[in-house]
Length: 155
Image (cartoon, rainbow, N blue to C red; front, side, top):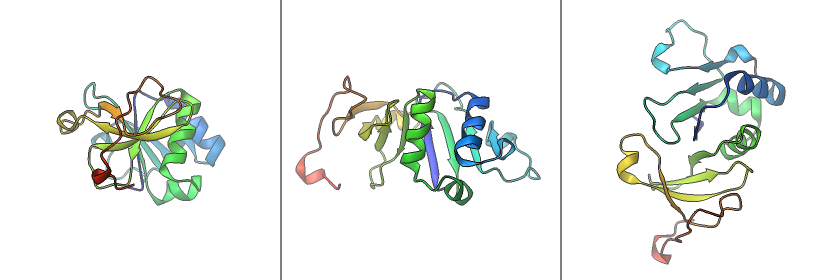
């Protein structure tokens, strides 16, 4: 998948479909909301899927999409996450592009973003809990910033 955006809480289904339709001309019928395993094999391939968490995991709502979503939006994962975060007032996490499984890019409700570290033990259970930021994030002034040591920087 080219897009895998983790949201802190549920996005309103009708609002998400309307936003994707108005902003990116994605048919509301092409946005699947629900558990992946509940889809039948014969269902048409959706452009985007919003999947709920299995439990009460932090950042457990996941919006996924592939080439069709990239073609429709003309934007990268962070830009789509920022647009949705601003529109729905919900924070999002996206892959930061490094090899570190506990590092993510946090997108705040104002669209600002920065790298964060998540709890590795909780993440093993699918729960993305933010431990601290690696850099200041405009929309997250309450978030503690602990820069990585120079030898650990890969960005």
